[in-house]
Every structure is written in structure tokens, then in C-alpha cells.
Length: 219
Image 1 (tube, rainbow, N blue to C red):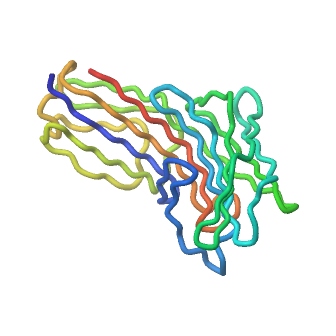
Image 2 (image 1 turned 90 degrees about the horizontal axis):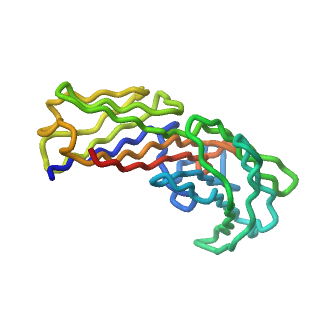
Image 3 (image 1 turned 30 degrees about the vertical axis):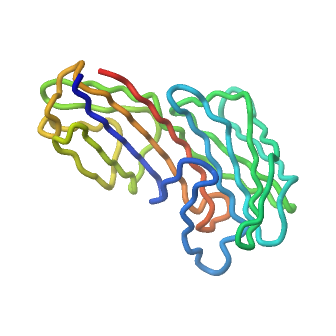
């Protein structure tokens, strides 16, 4: 069977991360980037993943933070799992259990430690609908889009493709010229949507709140 692979990434703030422990630090104006909070909510192949939060500090491990995700059917608490010391930075990890990712829902993460309350909100993308025909492929989804959205397409077997940047919003249509086999039954669509909010929580460059959805379907 002929197959085409699509990877779709829609991001906010120019930062793309897939989980709490994967981060690409940005220089923070006006001093140290710490404390930093890196939070992630995600769904992979229709399976909700645990909410994850990493708190980075140069003074000590933060093991007693009160962390809650709201915006779904009920508040989701997170509990401390472990911590590590890496290059002089204490990294403390928190996870949740028992919640359901809902595309198009705005979630708010609240993190309290050291007498300070930090919070940030993001709209979860997902619910991708794909329609294909002789005129091309149209992708639509629930969830926000922003000025710094990014879109990357990979095609297998090679028949075109490329990278697209800026102002990506649902729906997106790709002309049939990108694809050798635009007919139903000829390819697999793999879509990865990400909304990633940089400078969230603390207003510093190492802090992020990310919502992502990854789906694969055979057409």
C-alpha cells in the first residue's frame, strides 16, 4: 500500500516541546531564568498521558509544590515523583493520574511553592479531521492557533513536501501537487499538533506550558 506521512505542528510563542523534561532554554531578559516551570498535557493515539510538571531551581529541590490542572470535568492534582541535580540545577518532577484530555478545552495549570502562586493557561489542540481527494488534503482541528504557528510536512514515498511558517489556523489545505497519491486508501496520515506557551508561569524564558495531540490514521 502506498503511504504518505504528514507531521503537523502548531505552536505558540515560537517554542516547541513535547513533554515537561524536554525544553529548549531561551535567554531571559533581566537576570536568571530560575525558578522555571515546564508543564505538559498531551494525548497520544487517543490515550491521555499523565500531566507532567518539572520545577527547576538553583537553590534547592522543590518537593512540596501544590499543583492543580483545571478546565476539564474536575480539578486534577499532581504529586511529587522524584528530583535530580543536573549542572547545579535542581529538577523536581510531578505527575498526575486519572484525567481525560479534551481537544478545544482551555486548561489552567496552577503551581504554588515558596509562598508564590504561578499560573498559566493553554487551549488543547486536537480532534483532527482529515479529508482527501483529487484537489488535495484538508486538515481541520479544534484548539487555538497563533502568529508563530509552525507546520511541517514529511512525505513518504518522496513526492514533495516542505515547511510552512506563520499564522497557521484550522483548516489547512494542501494542494494535490504535493502528493503523488491523493486518493483514499493510498496513504497514512500522522498528525502532531502542539500549542506551546513560552514565558508562561514566571515570565521567564525557561518556563513553558504545552498542550499536544498526536494522531495516526490510515486512509
